[in-house]
Image 1 (cartoon, rainbow, N blue to C red):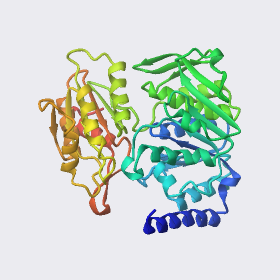
Image 2: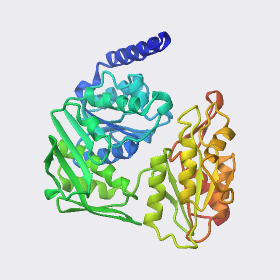
Image 3: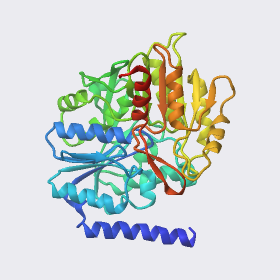
Length: 427
């Protein structure tokens, strides 16, 4: 490690320590749950928090979507999934001061690199899934995985693990007093729960992915959720496993999850008719493909029905490798692609678009519109009866990040509503 990197590392560590010291190490007075992985973290935090509230527990939660302590909640405006050490300790201090019993936190690899998780006593560590992301930041996929593993290495009590993920073996090696795994279908699971590799297993069976949501059974109990996509079954299972680890029964989980109408900016249907407009946060190749597959598998994509995709990629030198991959995936599923700006930071937005374009082989089904608002407007103008417009990359994010640290207020969902009203008068 180079000299200046060592200095930065020490700086981050000391900041974490003194922040915890200043607030009196608040995590010691709470049960803290950390959720990590490439995808699904924010959704799992939201689902788990709702279950705990349904069960009567006093809960605080922090994700890329929102920050909530009791009844008080606000959008996460940091443009950071996992805020800095000072704010995290303040959040935990507020939670314990207001009598919360649990704090559920989204934990990122970047946060771990900067010691944001240090001096937080996690009772439960949850692993959702792992796919290549932040490779340029970490240097390799193995380093990225290792960063995630540090949460499990530090958490000795309970580990929640996705048994269907190919990286399971790596996360299983970390010791814990209790391990709970989850999976869907595959081998039939005796009664929905059994014991393997030292872990209890919760399994979803007889799953159905419908236009109205998802349906599955656990231990013969039927779950009907309004969330879209097979991937949300995994998210629901993670939350159910967290609840199960704390003695919350399936009936309470079912009641809580079935009340949820949706997660902001995650497969969120903003417009229903005369055509659908969906906004999703997907910004990795795996997540993007799952979103497109969900649309094709959920709605009847008749010959005359078109899928119009608005697509960009984050700047700031982040994961340039994935840009042409995003283009390839879009070309595979979309009838019309509009390449646009996302969060360029200090990069040239046209260069980012050009790199996505490198994954496209046909010139007739896409166009480039740098202004994201104009790109959304164009997509809406192209949509006809029963078409589907899918806008990815930002979800419910409240900012667009530009050069020299500038941020402008943004929300893809509000832009859609604003432009739709100009043409149709009402939603």
